[in-house]
Figure 1 (tube, rainbow, N blue to C red):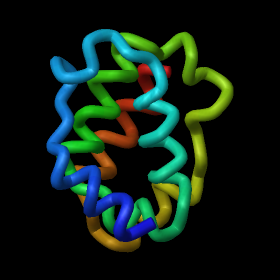
Figure 2 (figure 1 turned 90 degrees about the horizontal axis):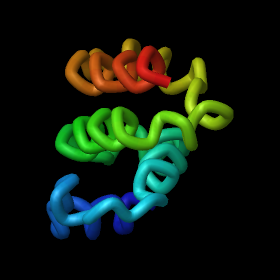
Figure 3 (figure 1 turned 60 degrees about the vertical axis):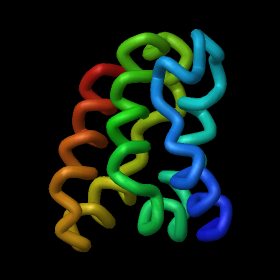
Figure 4 (figure 1 turned 90 degrees about the vertical axis):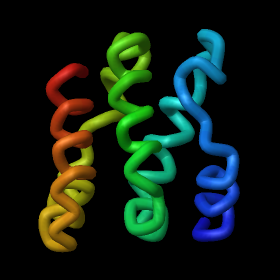
Length: 92
């Protein structure tokens, strides 16, 4: 997972790159929900998830909230990532 997240970081994907393609939000959620992914996913991808959630919140309703994500971010004092996560949960 760590190597995959490093590959994503190298790609530096932004919302304009996706051109309306659905699926990235689910990919990012799967990464975030894994114990390794939550540690290694860089802040720009958390911010991308917030942007994607604004556009595609309908598709994320059933699969978003995971209490362990919030707890892990709080324990690691990842305040910017936690802000993004709370935004995603509130939007959905």
